Image (cartoon, rainbow, N blue to C red):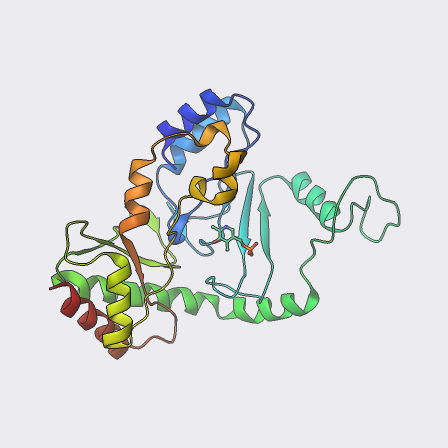
Length: 270
Ligand SMILES: *Cc1c(COP(=O)(O)O)cnc(C)c1O
């Protein structure tokens, strides 16, 4: 999140209820510091969308520990999984307690039959929690393997023309939920054609982008639900959306498979 763009958006919407930075691809941006400082001054709570960022850190501090809340997803495509569901981190003990009440039908206390607020059934089921617990036991290894695979891609991609690995900023330690790279906009192939050729000629499927559409371009927002805070050309975001790719990366990926992916990229982009 660009702190200057945030300031301009909040000036347009002075009644902003919360600010939600998204740690795209599993990278916590150093720009978060300026976002946090500004929001503290304005008294606006920050809720981190850390769905991509379980295990990622900035300055040694984990994603989800910067804002008033951090929201994580354990959906099967993420780095830590429980099948469905997630985790909410809270900076304030009382906030955590309030959230426990909301998720349990707004009951006034655990086990109480009195309801003192609106709520819902937002509990993680025991079955999903059991799955998630097992996955968490091996998470340190998951994280180490993802980082090793990413470091190997960095080396292998060095001589591939027309493709620049996305640089993780200093101080930020990615969990490599995605290994992102930027395609040269003036290169021979656009992303759609590149993905098609990789698939058809080399049997290589790239991972999904983050994302292929801007939020404000989704039909719901384009159809008059656009908040005033989302006006803007968003030129950098548009460039990113159009020209980035995500390489296959999962713990069982082998070195030979990584070489095959990079060889396919080199042959299509040269
Ligand atoms: C996956 C994801 C979500 C949603 O997570 P659920 O577990 O499906 O609720 C929210 N934000 C981002 C950035 C995500 O990638």
